Length: 568
Image (cartoon, rainbow, N blue to C red; front, side, top):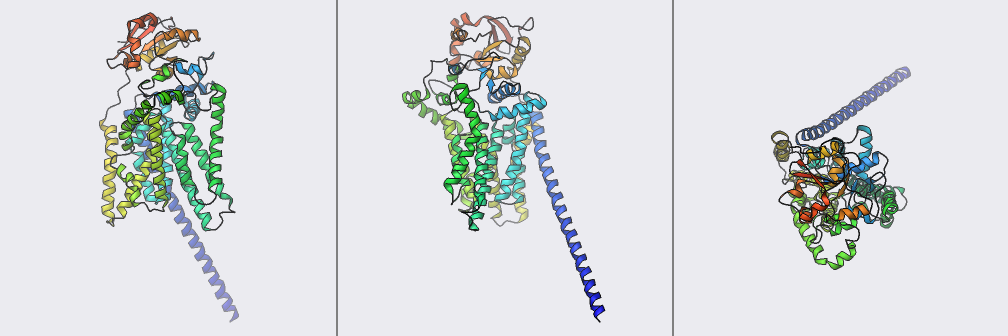
């Protein structure tokens, strides 16, 4: 009897072991299936992003057109060849702070360093050129999609994350940012990463406090350090206002240890930015880029557009003096900027999605992280808009919010749709309709739209690149384009032709003066009018027609070929 009981026990043990083995096998199989499905979905989404970018690039891209993109490219070339954060674009106002060295470059005083620095690393791998610049922005575009998925999944669930990413990858607004290559794609990636880190920090703190570990758990400082570091990088990428750190801090920091968290976040952000500040102090004896404060004077009646940078040292008052003397011009500038930004803000995403972003405050729960994020983004938008209006009217600077606004708009729209209680079929039809209206402009651009017209100056710039020696110095209204596309030292046209002789006294001898069609055309800007006067001929030199409504004047012969004449 005892033997039978022992045998029965052994059989039961074997059966139990076999059952557990089968269960483990099923669990492993299920996990592998889930993993395979996740990988397959991830690959599919990435292919959608790559396909949309590749097709848009092949159809719509015809060379860089943004001055900021070309400026970043030519600064990256200086970094690539070991010349430091320097530029071949000589803005007359910059001579107040530094001169041109023996390599024909001077310290960069206007742009942030991270975008050109990262571009220079890519240039070392595959060489420079317009395609490399856009490729870098395309990579930032793809990475942003994955960050959006992480945010949407954290706020809602996987399905919403997938919908958000696909909508982003086929968004004509996001693809347009990539091809413009002004740096909005990189800054958008970094600010979106900072927002994701802030949301994660918020959840971590709430979990710590629920476990009554708020005073002892050491995890409280890790999140603020990450958020601060990411914001520091965001600021170094350019376009973002330094004040954006305030709403970001309110998103990341909750309840206990607020002062300690804020201190950690601020210290890490400063540590990230300090090398740039040190560079500025060493190069120009200013903490921030020397010319950036003069953006306050741009787009005023006294200095229309960016004409303040054409002024020689001593011709421009300090920004503080200008504000005191011309407060009305500053108020008018801000009012005009708000008018100019009205449409770009509404076009951050598809006009069919933007209302869902605005209405998000109505259906996001008062205490939910979704409402907290919505408030944060609204505050960031307000700060960025006012900064753009007060400083340089760079409309590209608002586009860095395209990813997070699209995430909130799409996520909020799906949440509202599910709250209606409609059938899954009805919800699917609505989602399909949204995809259709978002896809329409993208598909139209890819299939029906032709290639973007080549810049009329492209032929002239090619001629300057090949026809003049590498040490030729060219004064022009298109200084970033000449420095990037023609690979020449470019001097922004001073405010008056006679200023060319003043530049010579400061060691800058202009060999050629190049007028684009924007100077010679009928709608010439008033600050270029002195260059069209009869008196200007005394300073311009020998005229060489290069066609396409553009002119080149030779002051010193620096020809690499026999003839730099008309191109047609």
